[in-house]
Image (cartoon, rainbow, N blue to C red; front, side, top):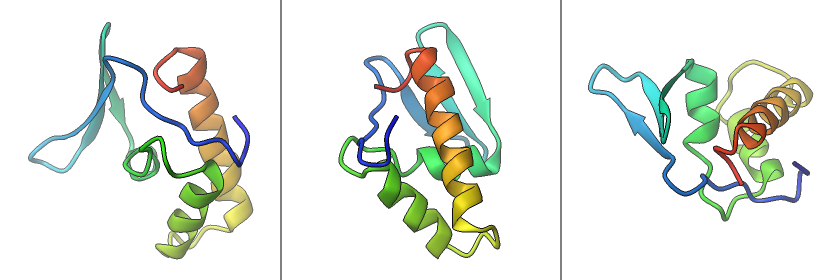
Length: 88
């Protein structure tokens, strides 16, 4: 996925926050539990924001991580989800 691409969840995939604050993806095959950083990134996936905009927003939120590291992590996450057909 390129920095200019605007990822969106595939049909049948939904992001959900539990009452305890944990995040998960509801997928046709079941549930994928997310760590806090993956949940933060995926909460910005809306089919409108580009990968670059998602990275910029996460960097702005002061995760105390260099933007280059955030970009690498977000890109890797989205690519893994794209291969599993959870992101388009």
